[in-house]
Image (cartoon, rainbow, N blue to C red; front, side):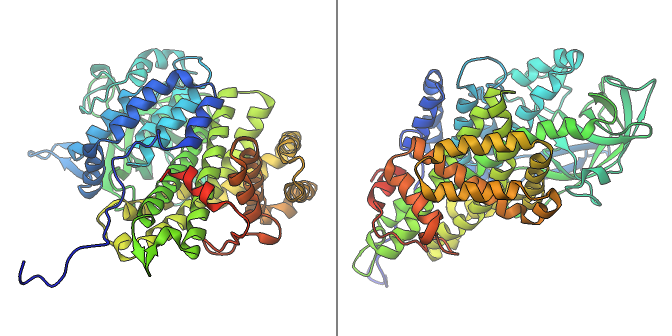
Length: 550
């Protein structure tokens, strides 16, 4: 128009609604290695649904229109309902329809854990909040399967592929969701400091009815159909309980929502504070064994934290790469400029390293109690949660900066990725808790730790930088446990980096593996900020093409 003072040029929208599976060679290869070819039609269909523009709109709307608490009805009756935007339910329906919640447990096909991980990873690149109830429900299944009477009652609802959002007793619904309640004000990660009391109605014991009185400071998805809760009995100590939203007599259970949390990210999902006022619960497992029982559930959720952060890293790398290939500055595309190429290469390497590790962990979960599977699950899962989740926090900030001021404006996916990243590092055990868990596993199962180093040694064979790093890890294992505890972060970091490097050597193109090792080990160890790489002699073009084909 005549009065216009500028024209819009050299402005490009963030990437959206693109085929994520089809453009992710590393993920396709991981599925093939795990013999999950049978799941490809489902995953391809899911990828196509995630690529629809309306799915990305749902993600934006679910996070902009956050959940709201309606504690009472119009006549003052306590109802404790949480109202979600319709886009939340659309995303929940989409994920559940794929069968991903129960896929790892409702069959014995090889590759079922890899297929589950891949679906989670794809969904997490579009919207992460809806994966919280999916994670907790999935993780609760093996715990509940150990209680035959209860599983016969609730199992069919958890294996169901429908999303039924009605607030009615689970028996009246097609499908249900399960949550978890551990954290209390005074303890945080120290679950043994929990004070919530459980009193038996009759004789007590496994499968018996109890009344719970106390609180939970973080109680995610409070409108789930049931929660697994840690509470203390007078005689046996901390035990685990199945606490449904509705009592067997059809009345609402007395788990009262005090308020919803105003979180930094994960805003589509409702987290709350609750009070138990003689709430109905059934004991799971043996009395006094509540923490090991809930840790079994948490081990699975920690895998999903790694996958969720890997998804965030992947989306951040792809967004940055797609944008810089279009945006011009100083006479040429940003992606052609040496400093930006170093940043993009670092993002790309971190993303593929996170994925290859997460998919290896998924295979370990499928392997069950095999010696190798147990070592990867017990030692590498907490180390990976520590390192990969922390890397997502740093790298999403760098990816946001790639977009300049446009990245800092809350219109598009970059700000949401940045806000979302810290949650996986905090939930299910903070960084220090994860490192302490690694150290405890080393102390309690030294043979498993040495076996893991031997396996990593096979992957490192012929690479002197990795051999040297493994020798340093071996030297650390010989230290007394009390001396090693303070080095927990260094040990966990080095363990993850060696595992990632070895897996990349085994599975990724040489350009990717060589670049990762050159920039993470030895004299060319990468710097204290993202992109502080010495890229001379590295095939950066090959790394970037693999991450997202031009």
